Amino acid sequence: MAYLEVRDLRKTFDGTEVLKGVSFSLEKGKVLAVVGSSGNGKTTLLRCLNALETADGGSVFICGEKIFPAGTGEKNGKDKKNEAGIGAETDETANEKTCEKTEEKTDSDELDFTLVFQNFQLFPQYTALRNVSLAADLYEIKRLKAMKMPFSERRKRKKEIKAKNAGAAKKLLEKVGLSEKFNAYPCELSGGQQQRVAIARALALQPKILCFDEPTSALDPRLTGEISSLINELKAEGRTMIVVTHEMEFAKSVADDVLFLHEGRVEESGSAAEAFANPKSEIFRAFVEGGKTK
Image (tube, rainbow, N blue to C red):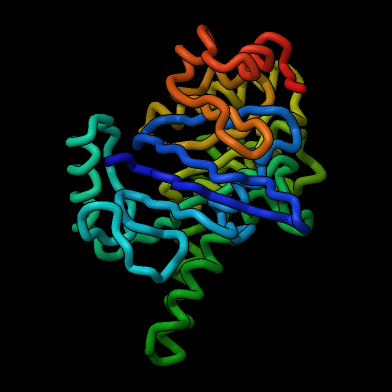
């Protein structure tokens, strides 16, 4: 069983079909590069997975649990809870064991997906530290409000949540090399530093799958190499990631698998090493060799 499985995902805007039945799967701990020319549905795919857009059709499974459309109760295989897995085994049996182990978790705070936006989308009025801790605060406090408890206890818990998340945010900023920028505002940070804050913010929500939309588009070559190294560090930790990019060398440096979208459809997919070395589709071959398609 694949960790992530997407089936026949479709999305239309104003009569224009952008995603025309996109299907793919991804094993836990792997990095998928989604490549293709502009306007072929790459970002729309990420936005649908992250519930920033609602797909018109199709389904999404994580560990066999159908997370889209929500509330249907349909399972892909065994009856499983929609909670995150631990581990990075890749064969079918190992993935089933991974998913089964996650059923033992009864208080998971993990989201299915989080997204690192192309233009970072940091809050300009907040410091780097607050940008990272804010979403986690809001997420946990929202859950807290649903619990029945005295006001004084809730207020105490809120303070504890904020203190915990601030500590976690500091560790994440240290992890991405920004230990001296806790109190810096976005306007005081370089593009590469803002990118790292955005990555730390996405990690703060403990996603099952971390998504990047063109993470190197606003960076110079040196910073592109740094982001490549950071993504590979996250992969070494067992993170499952989807990276949308138009830069082939960057895709080759981070991806285990590749998904090539052309006119809203999957034109080619498979092992990144094999696909880039020996493209089966002439359209993909032209894209790899020339960096663009007609």
